[in-house]
Image (tube, rainbow, N blue to C red; front, side, top):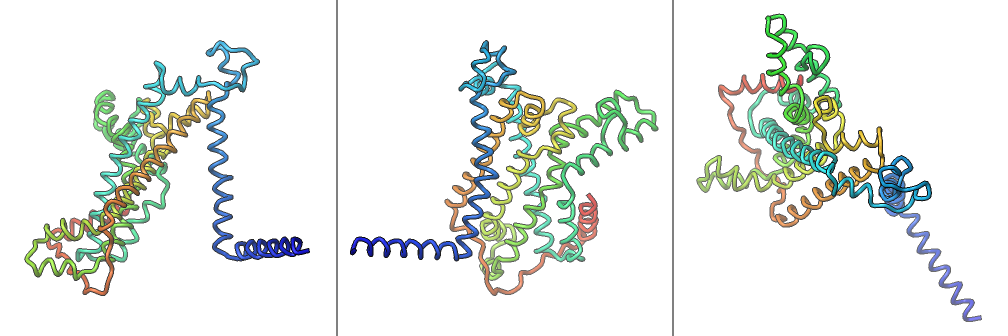
Length: 354
């Protein structure tokens, strides 16, 4: 009898604990998120990973296998990707191209976004409400649309099939097709074009994060530096930059990861001249086969993104003393742009129309 009562008490206790978990909105949200994460991300990754270790029928001739070997465990696809004569063209060259684009875009986007954020927050640039919205609008346009616009301006008749706007003007001026190709091809296609187009798309990450960090800095810190006799450059280096560093690092991680994984712009501006990134090469194999070679590339992309995020967490964790400081300090003194005000206004207007 006592044992039965003890079981009933334990059952009621367990029932109450489950009820407390289920009725808590936070726990429900976490549970739903875990289920969605498992269904949408974990299971597809596991399925792709398992496919890379199963021999497909179309590759029997290459491996010397028989029909009985279809679906059996194999390292053929990973060996072909990592340790074969084709590894450079299949994986390492596209990976190098992806990393080059990611670093190039992040450097340019961080510089452009930070300058725009500083102009919006710390200068006397007029019409700030308009420009603060205008600099975000380009991000609302898909990046592949920007690449199409880029081609419409710079594409050449030999590679693009039809002359772009600038090539047409040059042809009307009597410039030879060979000369047009020599001048415009390096600009219209390849690494430089991809970096420029993606920079004009992803700089918004830096602008939003850095402008928010600049707005939240207690101006008394900078005023104290001025009282102590520090120059503008010293205040920027020793006070402002350390405080916005976490925002810059976060923007860098977002920009690099997005640039490495993007497909549309590299496909439009790189595929036609044989310039492949890891994303475009992976899509080629998944669409045209063998898929079991494309899937390992997707795994490499996931691992690369995870490594970038992990590195950011380690760097930010080491520099925890650099945190954005907020407070009720006086309003920061705006830098007078003087004669540079009108050129910068024109630059902002041009940037808004990109």
